[in-house]
Image 1 (tube, rainbow, N blue to C red):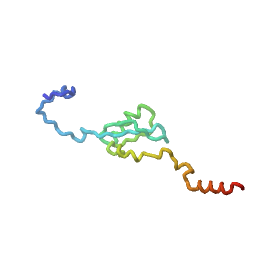
Image 2: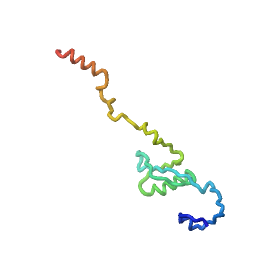
Image 3: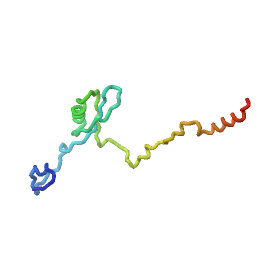
Image 4: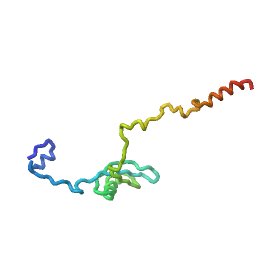
Length: 124
């Protein structure tokens, strides 16, 4: 028998010479990200993940798992493999100018002209 620290394997009493058949398509379901909308006009929010054999079952599982806990008017499911995310190494794409000087007029060349005009026409 296979000795394992995992109690699930120990309970099965698997022989070491046991050949395990490869998984079939239905043995290994994909994961789907579930989003729900609380009421019309609001954005969808991520509420969790379900395992399902296809899109239709993922929608059904998503509704059963997350739609019954609260008010939902719409549910989206997306295969986890279809979600594209940025790398943590690309953190520089989120950097902004912290002082936001571009919002102030002081940095423009026009200020020099305005001050010069005020100085020249002080007596008017």
